[in-house]
Image (cartoon, rainbow, N blue to C red; front, side):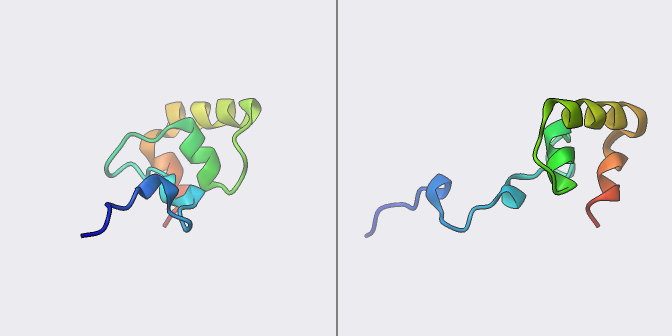
Length: 65
């Protein structure tokens, strides 16, 4: 038998595969920023935090189908 594959080292693992859509986890502000296609910076994370406070998990629906 071969060794088990370490999923953290898969070559095709991308930032998109790390996003949480809310169905299995709560959405973090960082996830919301990444879903918009931008790099998480302190300013963008704060904006995302405010959006999540205002709209809840539905805020991510702007970016994800």
